[in-house]
Image (cartoon, rainbow, N blue to C red; front, side):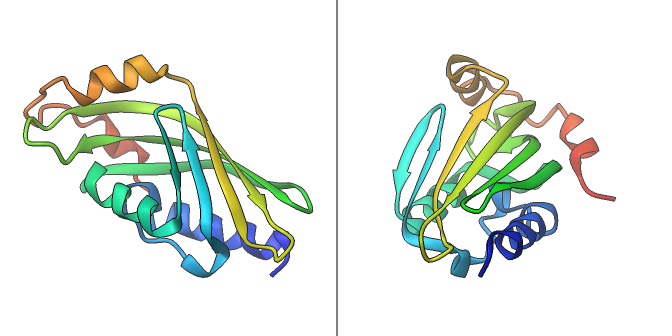
Length: 147
């Protein structure tokens, strides 16, 4: 697949599949040994990343809004998104919607070899939210849902 086709698949997986909160992505566009880096985690391996996603956000009470996605070169795609909602921990921590950028780097075979994220919140803020009980009170994540 070319970079434009991979971009189209990622666009669908982010908008429709909500893969940051559901884990539903098109596995065929990711290398098995893909590296996933964000300000609080660094995971190598598609299966390990998907297992981590399954443990994180509650897909019924979380959402991703894709702001933009573009192929920036023959081997790079950049997506800007907003994400918020509840984590699956017993104390129901709420993650206030935040903006992030994912840079997808493709290998020579046209597969995503790395997904590197930056966020507009610090790792400390993200970790603090993860350990702050909210008991299901906040709902600003709903405005992120596609209509």
